[in-house]
Image (tube, rainbow, N blue to C red; front, side, top):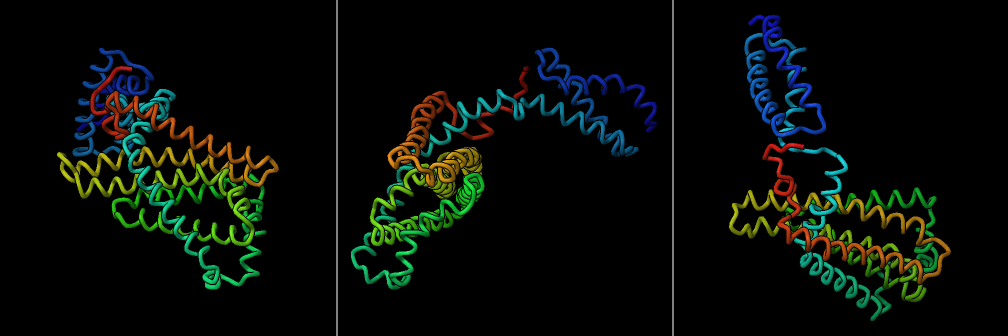
Length: 330
């Protein structure tokens, strides 16, 4: 194959392919033209690779074909429209779909934490296995409070955000095992119950709730949502319904990825509260109200916006909701 002859004969079509693939908007006839140019370009690329692999031509054609494929499949990238759609329908629909899972996980989590605290508080001698009275009192009166002021507010908030986001993503990603979300949730519940018992015993309940509620309510909400999302993936593996097991897990997994991305945002808000509000001099009532307001906003988003998205037929599945299997104009 003569590359120069091919360039001369197919050059105008390749130029047009490059032009249409780079446009922000396409009308119907242009979509049809781009689809035809895409098929022709793909055939040209296959011929070049098979008969005379010119690296520069292969690289240029591959780039233009990738851009054209993106336009034909309707993937809008990180455009304002795509981001708006994600917040309006994809994320709330996915969260609404696991609302009962979230409530179930929340009840179980609080029960474990409360049982752990009650078990220790009913028999103070059990604290001996945790530490000496002086160590526990120091933790309750100083370490528990100083923890929130160990760095600058920005550094501490960022550190907490990254750590909690990593845990949440692990819960979702490890959901297919069925074990990891349960283990992570149990460990968190047991640790909170232990901390609550120590602080309540040695410094009083006001000390514990004043420092845990402002950020703890939205932070735990995010962790519980992550655990519920992970368990939902495992349930899809066990009970796929009318779909094949692979299809059920894939669809549910994509919806849970949508939720995982949303949790990163929620945990960012929780990190701000933990870094700037919890250790601040604001009245305790105001600090707690801010945390509760953020959590109430999340539940309103799930139940109101999520209900509307679900009623419109959205599920949060990145593939099903995007519709990128069908060429679109615009």
